[in-house]
Structure formats: structure tokens, C-alpha cells
Length: 144
Image (cartoon, rainbow, N blue to C red; front, top):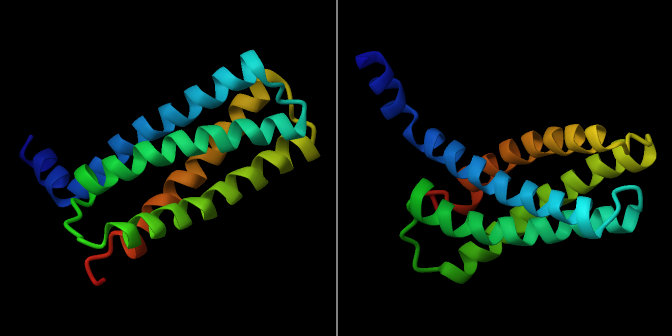
């Protein structure tokens, strides 16, 4: 038990990020799936991208507040600069996600419901890792 506590303490920021990341992912996925399985059609490339963008907007708002407060515990007074960096870094991972979904679902025609779920989850893993690295080393960097 002591060993587990030491590991959690040593990697506390990563654990907090993973918890917030899971919650952010749930916000993103829930939004995307509700849109794709009710109002929008994943087989339509434009509607697919609309679902990505709308789920991105909601998850970025949630992620900024939770990452700033709970994960990186930022005390920066330059909030506008921090938000700008945060949103910019999320645009980078949004483009990565959009490209991956376009490649697999639209271009390679992996557009069945199970395939849409699978490729969305794969893209989310890539996005979570990218978001952590960008947040840790650029957005909420203690060196700024």
C-alpha cells in the first residue's frame, strides 16, 4: 500500500490529468455520439466534421477550467495569454483528430457504427497524449 501511495504522489499531476482527461473525453464523446446518432450522419463528411467541432468546443471549455484549476494549478495573472495558448494547442489536436477521422472514416470508408466508435476512441488517445504534452510544456509551463 505504501508503494502505491508513493507512486501516486510521485505522478500526482499525471493522475490528476488522466482523471480530468477521462472526464473531458466523456464530454467530447457524449457530445459527438449524441450528434452522430441523432441529428447528424457520420457517413456525410461535413456532418462528421460538424460533430467533431461542436464536441471540441464543449470539451475545450471544460478542459481549460479543470486543467487550470485542478491539474496544473496555474496562478498566472496573464489569463488571456494562457487561454490563447490553451485554445491554440487544442486547435492543433483538433486538426489531428479531424485528419484521423477523415482518413479512416471518410477516405477509407470505415463508417459503420462500430468502426466510427473505434476510430473515434483511437483519435481520442492521440489527442489526450498531445494535449497533456502541449499543456505541460507550453500552456501551463512554470518557466513562462
